[in-house]
Image (cartoon, rainbow, N blue to C red; front, side, top):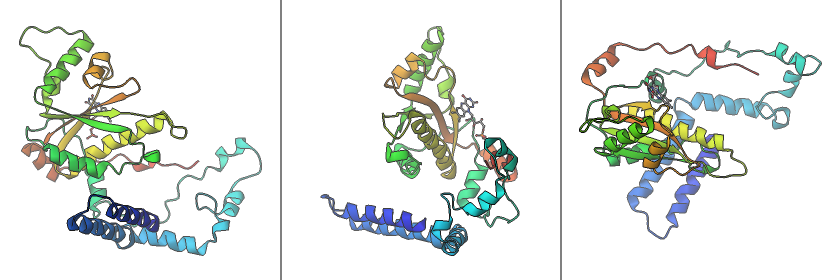
Length: 291
Ligand SMILES: Cc1cc2nc3c(=O)[nH]c(=O)nc-3n(C[C@H](O)[C@H](O)[C@H](O)COP(=O)(O)O)c2cc1C
């Protein structure tokens, strides 16, 4: 796996060298640094032992004796009794937890951020600036994306644009307010990012996969903001894809609005609470099974 990733990155670095506009020395160094970091992560970092043991297993088992999932077909066949689909349920083995994991979700900073993330419903007025947002988007653009169709984008909503969103929500709900009154829902944060899922027609990539990629970008955005120290809450609702709201966001017919990310600073009182309390995670066994 490390080798595959490395070769892709290498190609990209090489390609950009041949572009007409010359890359600065800094960019070249950054590229080298990224490559080194990726190499260290896969070969020497926390994922190293895992990657190495997989590679060792691979070397021991001849390729021809493995099926697509790396499992030994002889072993699989022995586990399956004779008969058709009716017997398949009876052979369900369930996950095997007899070998303890070497993954430490507290020590690993990325896994720790993943497991401690939470939504912040009331955020303070400070927000990341647009350049910060660009860096966040840069980091999450690694989202899994079949055929790299890039079927997602975010729209920045600040200041008066939040009132325009309130008006569109009112229009959708048929709410008429007194002069001077306004829908305060979009005012719950100084910055909102609207997520648009924008699938394209593709022979091999159905629309639902592209919505899954867009949703993935949304989840990564939440994580990236959390890791960068910002509070965020993803909100949507029944009015999200109504005509007035879609019109405001300039959506094409095939596009879907996936909701808004309300972004701001984590209030001090909340910060204090975060340092002392940890919300228990759901039991992971419920999310994992075998066929
Ligand atoms: C697509 C999507 C839309 C959501 N819309 C709302 C919403 O409109 N209102 C709300 O209170 N929570 C909404 N949530 C849930 C919150 O963002 C949040 O996940 C939830 O309050 C649980 O908090 P946690 O993220 O800390 O576990 C939505 C979540 C997703 C993924």
